[in-house]
Length: 266
Image (cartoon, rainbow, N blue to C red; front, side):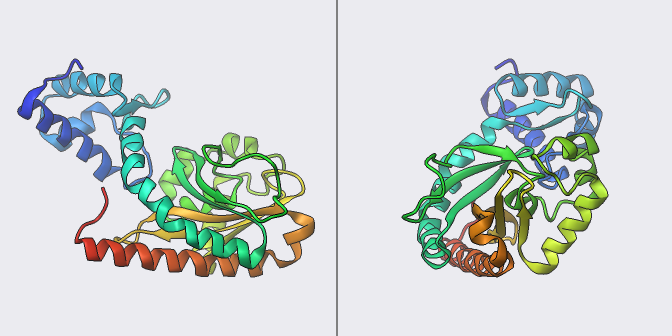
């Protein structure tokens, strides 16, 4: 890495990473070099060199449009080896309980940039489709899980990340085509406690999702049911309410475990 090494250099790098994390509120919004320098109280030229080195290592990434910086993929990859791997282990019985009740494929999703990543899945005996969902990413805007995962973003972040062009390109039959429509949909999700989509991502397919929260009340994952419309379409809201209950149970389990451990996962 081209940035300074050793305890002092590491401490300065950590200050930059913490500034990026604290001042984007988990939305992924990018900060310019000048703003980062202001936040950490260092010279702009020093911060610029440090950011370049961090970007080279994947710890931060540079937005090609704004030229600002945000936290990078490697930090999320490291986190995935700790908290998310444990999350999958804890969540598996809850996913299986949903499958037993609804008899449809149920998955656990997390957010990766503008995409939804499936980290675990359970399927009923009749198996909606023959492919595995783990490791598959799909656009957030056209999926119930994606909308749940961004449902508490502020308006500025939603408008920055989900432009009309990106919304129109998400899915095969998007009902949400403008940031205003997406903001209205996110408000409904917060009110109802779950999200539904009807043939927006894929023709003939419906889905519903609900948020899973950590010790601090932050949305860290979504439980998602996906099924053919012919089987689930007429009971989609009922399934949504059920998956919201399962997500709440998982949230309570995570909170209980984190309180018992006396720590919050990073």
